[in-house]
Image 1 (cartoon, helix red, strand yellow):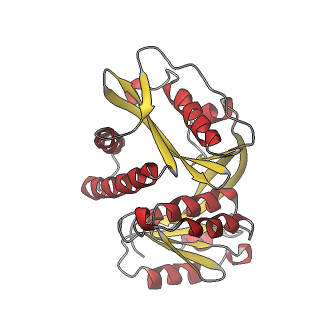
Image 2: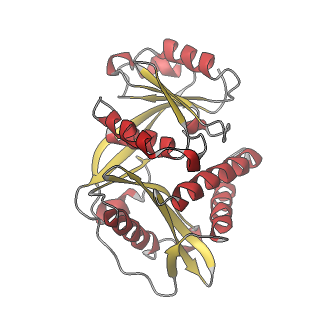
Length: 282
C-alpha cells in the first residue's frame, strides 16, 4: 500500500484517512491504509472495496491490492479474484484484504489462495519502557543509518530463504525511501539498536491521528532474546506520545512468537486482519 510523493502531500489530506475506521474498517486495516496514504499511496474508494496503489513500488504486494470493506461480500471469492485481475492485470500475485474470515474458506482455496490471519494488538495506555540492554546504543535513524536498515531487512530475507531476492531488494529500497520521507516530515520516526556501530535492530512508528502504528519490527537473529526489541518499542511509544498519540497499534502474524513481547509491554489482542493471498497470478 503506498504512494504519490510523500513530501508534496498537503496536510489537509490526513483527516479523511483517519475517518475510515469510523466508517467500518477495523483499526488494523484503517491504520494500514493511513500509513500507506501518508507514505504516498493512492487509495480509491469504490464503495464496497478500496483499491490501493503504490506506483513508486510496483512489486510491493500489500502496496498494490484491493481491500474489501463490506463484510457481507467476504464470501464472494470469484468476484474479488476477478476484480483484482482487472485492477492489476500485470500483477504476478493476488492480494485481497478481507473485513472478516469467510464462512466458506474452500471458495478461496479453489483459486489457490491462502487465507492468512494477522493479529491486531492495541494499547490505550503508554506501553511499558524496558531498560536498554548493556552493550547496545539506541538512536533515531538518520543519514547512513538507512543503508544499514536496508541491509538488515535484505539479510533477514536471505536468511529465511524467501524467494525472489532481487525483487525483494528493489522492494526494500523503495520502501526505505518512503520510510525516510515520512520520518523527515516527523510524521513517523524509525529507531535503531546498534552494536559497535552496526545496526542490529530497528522499528518505526507512524502517527495516524491520535494513534501510533508500529512498523517494520526486526532484530538480527544473533541479537534476539536480549530485550533490545522491547526497549525500542518503548522508545517509539514515547516519541508518539510526545506528538499527541494516546493509542498504540501493532499488526503481526498470528503465529509470530514476538507477540508475547508485545503483550508484555502492554499491547493486548484486539482483532484480526484477514488476507487472501497468492504469490503467483491465477
